[in-house]
Image (cartoon, rainbow, N blue to C red):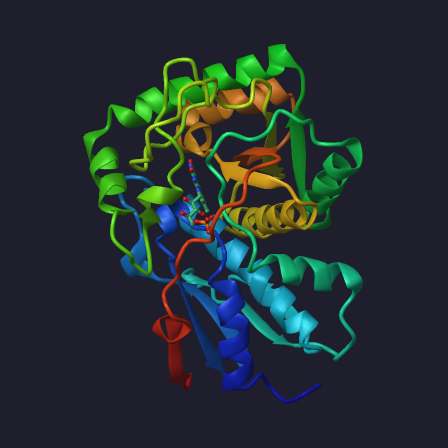
Length: 323
Ligand SMILES: Cc1cc2nc3c(=O)[nH]c(=O)nc-3n(C[C@H](O)[C@H](O)[C@H](O)COP(=O)(O)O)c2cc1C
């Protein structure tokens, strides 16, 4: 296929891309059509200077949005060839997608694409039922298919050791008033197209909780409604830690999340031990893996919940652009 993508194809694919997760639901992305190619770029106005000074979170979110873009285009029969960070002089351009040879979507692409609209962060306690081996295997394979690894933290000792790292990272972050102020600014108690709705924030933390919950102003907890005693904790990692590696990890994250959704599993993310450099290194050492941890997930069987709002797709499109 030599002709480029159309504005209509861009708009449809971007509508799926914006369903990706992002730190505090900032939605730090923009989409445009340049010479028939779809370009995904960082929206510099939606950076989080206190919570994400290096831009790691923005690149993870944009990578996740890129995964959705690829799935949307593939399931429409117009798959893309992707170049990451195509312009060395403009590192905010995360990816450029041009049409590849048209083909029928694979069943895996179709089921992952169907999961996009259903996925959401479920911060409530999960049922104690264990995640079966075949679902675990699918999650590990999803990360591998995107050139990343997924390490499942198994057993009480390993989970407790992880929890200790996560809690200490959480304490470090909570001592930073700029970080706390920035997070508070993104909590929404009224309907809003961005930010984290307080109702999605999960229940308030309690001292007996094993894993730290990022405070999004959640509800009080019903007595006895504790978190699952042995959560399935999964650490997603990449081989390197360049900006490009982080975009690759974002795509892998989204593929793992969509695979979990497709398998009927609930997930919440836990990035405190990634955001604090010492904790990230302690986590890497505890796993004994080469490469860099990029995200931690709690995975299990959750109660039904709701997806969170996004800005309308026209608010994230730049049209038209002539280079
Ligand atoms: C880089 C990154 C870090 C995140 N860290 C956390 C976290 O530590 N705690 C949490 O509850 N959610 C975390 N999230 C989830 C976002 O808050 C969530 O994706 C966003 O609010 C949109 O909601 P949704 O996932 O339900 O669509 C993170 C998401 C990303 C992409």
